[in-house]
Each structure stands twice: as C-alpha cells, then as structure tokens.
Image (cartoon, rainbow, N blue to C red):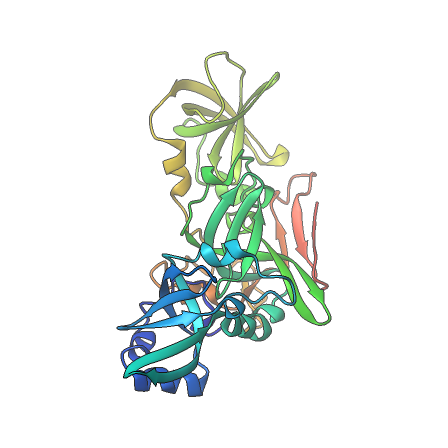
Length: 354
C-alpha cells in the first residue's frame, strides 16, 4: 500500500495532517524537517514563472526550477502556467522572515521526484493504482498518477466498446482506478507509465449477466456498418442490431434483447425506438469508480482463488484506490468461446493483448 502523500494532486489539500502542518509557521518548519509532502493552491504565476501558492493562511513561492520534475528534460512554460488555480503538491525548502513577514520557499520538483523514486519506480504492468483525469485529447486521456506526474490512458484502453473521444466516457477531475499497462525505464529510473482501464470494467460474461433475453434496455449507437448497427449496452459490452436508416452514431436508443450467445460472444438486438432521451455523455459519467474485477488479487496476499470479488473502491477515500492490487492475466472472452481475447501483464514492463 502506498502512502497518501503520493496521491494525485488535489487529494491532500483537505487532509487533516496537511491542515495541521500548514496552520502555523512552526508546523511548516516541522514539515520541512520531516520532508513531508503538502498541498496548496497556486493562485498566481509571475513573468519569470514563479508560482505563488496559498499555504493555509500563508503564501509561499515555487520558483521555475522547482516547479516540475523532468528527469533532465527542459521545463515547458505551459506546464507551470497551467497550474494556476489548481492544487499543487510541494515540500518546504525554507521558512524565514524578511521585514517581519514570513518568506516560504517551496519545491514541487522534490515532491514529484520522491513520488517517482519511492512509488512509481516500483510499479509493474498489472498494478492497479489511483488516477485523476487532468485533460482529454482525441487520442486518449492524460491522468495524474501521483503528485502531478502524468500518464497517458490511450483511447483504445478506455473501454472495450469503441469511442470517438474520451469525453464520451470520462471527465476532467474524475478519480478512478486504472491498471498499469506498460512502464518505460532508463538507467533504472521510470520515465513513462501508460495505463489502461478496460480490464477494470468487467469481462464479457460479467457484463452480459446484467441483461436477460426479452428485456428492452437503453443503449448508445457506437457504429453503423453495412451488416448492422453496434449498440453499446455497457462500456465493455456491445450488441449487434439489424440495419435501419433512422439512427446515427452517438444516438441513444431503446433496444430489445433478442438473444445472448456466450459461445460466439454475441448479443443480438432489435432497435425499438431511437430517441434523444438520456444524454450519452451523462451515461458515460456513471461508473466513474468501476468495480474492481473478480480476477484482481492483493499483491500482499497469496490468495489464489480468482472467484473472490474484491468489491467496489470507496469513492470517498481516494487512498483506497491506491491499494497494492495486481492483475496478472485478464480474459475478456468466455471460456466456452473459441475466440480468446485477453490481456497478459508481464513483469518486464510490457503487456500483451490478444
């Protein structure tokens, strides 16, 4: 289990210990001696790229060279400017006085370096960690995996069902568990980590078990092909409906479940009524904290029973998303299906999908 100090930025600022340390100059001096990681809100960025940070009832500064841990790469101005108005983690460098006023020097770089060395460098593919969405691009979502250190969640790893943009599934600020997909290392130091989410949203059988033949349910049209229309029932489950000319991609539709065939991993649907009812985007936000799959096992135990469910993380406690959980292998397709779709996480820093 990791310490709460290495959670994504914004999760420490309301922490009781953080408030205690930032309530007085003596508390800040104690945090400096102990090397504690704290958080405040960046309220201003000067022309020389110095951040002014609210630290409890005080203000501190993070100079340009102390703003980002880059492992030797040049610091990009935009990486500093965009922190204004947002929480930033830091370690206290010094607490002095000038003209009777406190002068507090802070370092976000040291906090991030500690996070990389003590936490992120120990991660391997298959580890489940806490992440917070920071911004969305057409190719994927960037997430904070600890102290503002960024990771990429590629769009094809957001879910099994295909989407055109991560905004259909995620929102900025969303805290969620993700799984380490691959790790790039150089000279023993972790440089980049890629993550995935599809393995945490359930297998085909787990998702199909939510539905019954004869039901009429709501789905989202994801693609229209010459042979039929794919309708998403859950982020990791889609069915095929007969072609019709009055539907469009991203449209919500009521669908009748005609058959569920695990051997072929197919669900046959009939579109009853395409309508502009529940917004697909609002539906996508539901389940921002998905259940951990049944195949997940604790890295701290020797539990070999894959049928035990770990349960749903407590969304009110981000630290619970940072438990040392690990997946070695995730099979999406049913055992009775000859077509095998699975992810195998290797210890060499990569993962294999088939």
